Length: 108
Image (tube, rainbow, N blue to C red; front, side):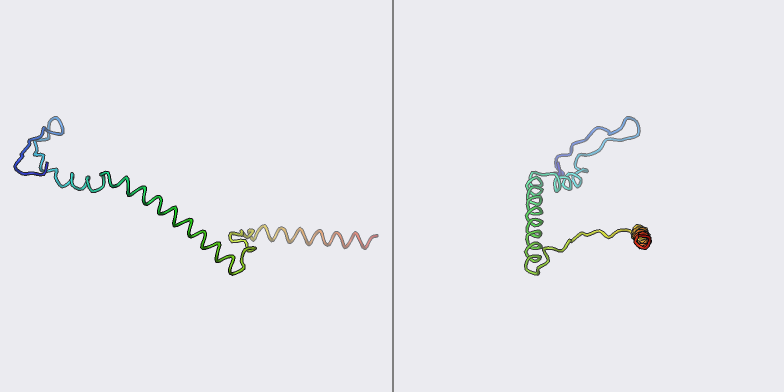
């Protein structure tokens, strides 16, 4: 396809405004597409999938090992803190129940 000696003339790509063209003019595009679309890309993708899986598993293993050695096994890593509005409402409700308990104890 990229050999200039084989001058293949190709038919127009559209009906009215396109002209005939040489096949060798698409040589750069064909080489670029072969760079990404070849049998080695299948093996490369399988290798990358296996490598990424092994890397992540080893990373998790190292993280757990360090957590054990540093005695951080009981610590929650992704503990979510409540929203400030919720904490405020909770504290208000708690103070109201304590006031109610005090008044109930005083009456008895």
